Every structure is written in C-alpha cells, then in structure tokens.
Length: 188
Image 1 (cartoon, rainbow, N blue to C red):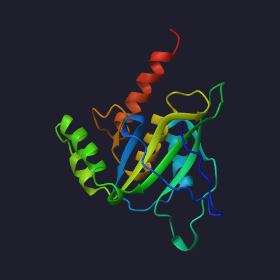
Image 2: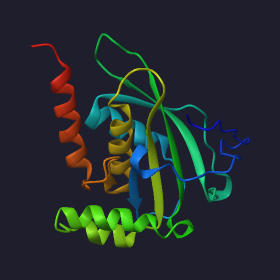
Image 3: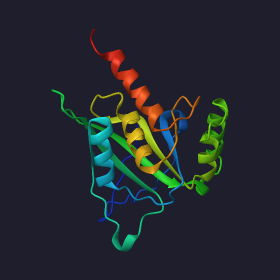
C-alpha cells in the first residue's frame, strides 16, 4: 500500500519522500538533477509516441525556477483513440541520487547483465532517481507503470531498471515491452 502524500500550494510533496522498493518500481537513472516535471513535454511525448493521455493528479508550479529536492506525483494515463478511455493512476517519486548511493548498484548490476551497452555510462552520470510504482493507485491498466516510466525516460533520457531488476533499457526497450504486453492481452 502506497503512503498518502500531501502537497503544498506549488504541488510539491510536503510528506517525506522515501525510495520505493526497487522490486516494486521502475527505477530511472536521470542525469538531469532537477525534480521538475515538464507536463507539456510529457503530455506531448505520451500522445506522439505512446497514444496516451498524460496528466498530473495535482498541478505543479516552479516559481523563480526553483524545484523541490524530492517530490512525488500521481500521474494519470489513458489510451487515446480507443473505445475505453479509462484513466489509470500511478505514483511517482524522485530524489537526488546522493541521498542513497547504493541505488546506483542496482543500475550497475542491471547494466552488467546486458554487457554495459552504454547503459553503464548513463547510470554513472545519474544525478537523480525517478521511480514509478508498479502498484496501481486506481484504474486497471496493468501496463500503466511501464507506460509512465517509458514516457519519463523519453523526456529525461534516462535508462529504466524494471522491478525484476534483471535488465536495463531505454525508451526503445520500454516500447517493445509495451507492445509485447499489449499483444499478449488482445483477443485473437
């Protein structure tokens, strides 16, 4: 069960933001040190590359270019152009990597399993961790956490370690996994 989060007038989490267990979240390693969520860019990438609506459960504001050290958000995603427009909500947290240096080991281990492939370099450059809980807050799209992770990865240029932790991939790998998951649930 995810902890309840309260937000201030800027939409920043005022609750303590703890790391999610890596076996229960998609973990992204971002070189961008900012906790800013560019909702316009996320929504654009979601529409263009994932046929998905993308909205925040609470508006975010960044007065004077300031961002919080750690933050959380509820992200609502929904398929576009399909009969079902049901919204699924997932929970996202972000925090600076220096708050937990051991998290880098997760990315390093995942990169080693694929022989590095440049992902090791991206993990080494990471300054911020983003995690998308694999537990749905509401809705029933089981692919929503991976979809949100893929959208964030496309904006942040961040590799993703899935909850299984046995690999690491970028946006292309996430899209392939989404397509495979959606194909496996379609009626023949």
